[in-house]
Image 1 (spheres, rainbow, N blue to C red):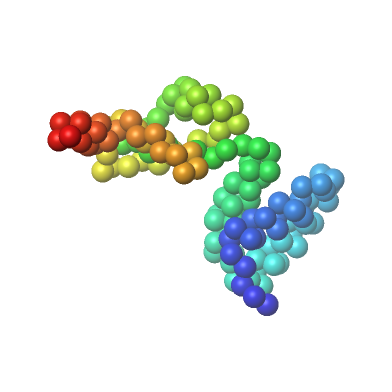
Image 2: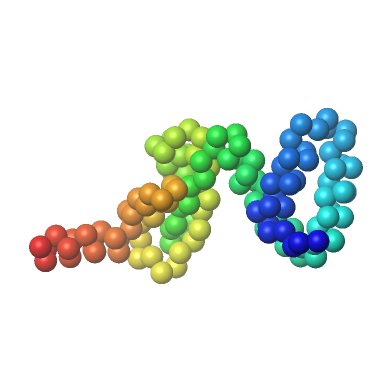
Length: 129
């Protein structure tokens, strides 16, 4: 059997559970765990669940966004960021210790750089040109 990626396994989990009656979900999960065991992917179950969650959100029309900050971002700020980028935006926060301050937000291929480093680079380019 060809080894499946965590993304593929996340999609499989989505499709075997999406239209199931609630009482049948435990059996489906048991069978899925057997598949993970056969694929020798039990140790990567967190990555599989993350892939499932991302794919589920994608199927619901939600857009994942990444927020990078040197500090913890408050829920109210995350809510405002999500609202600004669309009500279906789902933020994931990553602490970046190499940032001086500010935040960087990524939505697909678009980057909104509100970091101090980004502002200094912009200032430098403006002064040089």
